[in-house]
Amino acid sequence: MAHVQVAKLERKTITEKVIVYGSVVAQPGKTHSVSIAFETRVRHILVAPGQFVQENDPLIEAELSPAAQVQFQQAKNAAEAARKELKQTQDRFNLKLATNQDLSAAEKTARDAEAQLTALQRAGAGGDNRIHSDIAGVIAKVDAQDGQIVPPGGPLVEIVAENEIEVKLGVEPEDLSAVQEGAPITIFPVNDPTAAQVEGSIRLVTRRIDPTTRLVDVYVALPKGTKLLLDQYVRGEIQRVEENALVVPRSAVLPNESREFKVFTVANNRALTHTVKIGAENPREMQVIADDLHPGDLVVTVGNYELEDGMAVEIKK
Image (cartoon, rainbow, N blue to C red; front, side):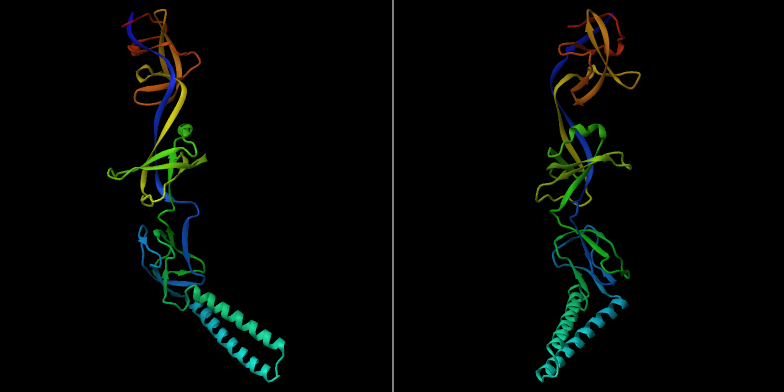
């Protein structure tokens, strides 16, 4: 006869801390790409990934590529020629030697030429050869290198504003029940015990498993003023709450031969085996799921490793 200690199976609320890991990323669509509207040769990169820049700080020294230099010079020549033609047409018009149609055509040609030249100048052509940041933020990526020819509109530098970051976490599929959009979550920087925790909220739970990590991506919105670093490794803690759960002490749950779990109850001085599934758990208690368990059942907490189904037992007080 085996001697055991028991506890009553309870129906109550159990709380579990779910821990997940991830990193700080830019919010979707919030990466500011710096580019130029014409073909450019990069002379010198002035920033590095991770560097913080203020608005109007120089990012890159660049110059027009040979082809763009020809384009810019042609635009200057066209604008100068159009201005001269307009003046000559205006003079002829004043002398009644040109019609209203002639003057209107000359005015349109001059406007178009000036607009083309102004557009190139606003894009940096003919300027100080330095491209400046239009926002304050962190350099997320440098897409070009010294000496490179970049096509029109090609990305040169990508910038993320400090307040446009969020956290991307990878969650095990079996923990998804603990992750609800809008739920609070606590974020801790990893490897920095002095850093303050950040209270965020779950913005998005994706509906797919990442084929590389086999985890589900979850995105966390951060409060304004959060000073986490881009690409910083972080830990997230979520409180998973299961109400109206069947709860037993952790010591009552044992693994079985089928890689499942079991508990023993005592009835009529006999041990009865129950195969269970595990729900929420914490260091003291576990939620058990089984059709043949009920509140008030006596579950074995001490002496259960020696038990077999149907074995006679004596309950120690």
